[in-house]
Length: 81
Image 1: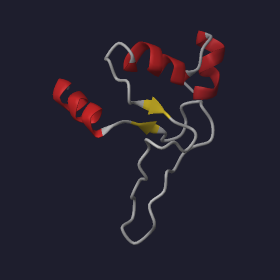
Image 2: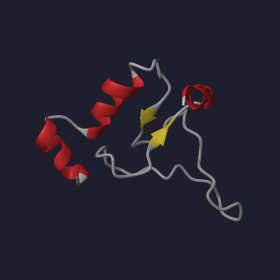
Image 3: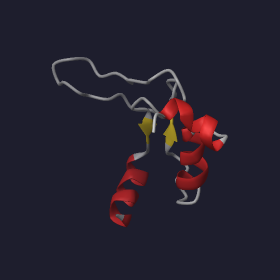
Image 4: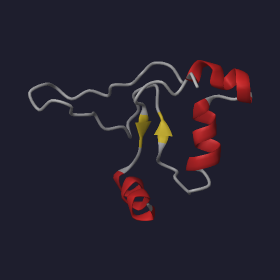
């Protein structure tokens, strides 16, 4: 399914689904689908020879790699799996 049609089919954005049906029920309060730079975000290092960046996709449609979490929540998720 193409993400732009998600809202048309289900009546809400993909990121809303993640927040309401995944993050909140799991108690993840520091995990989000970010589209803007915020103080809690950490830059991503893809290439050690280049400067790190936030690499935020500007739209809230689930297409970009905008899933950010705190290290503690990431570790807790790995343990749950």
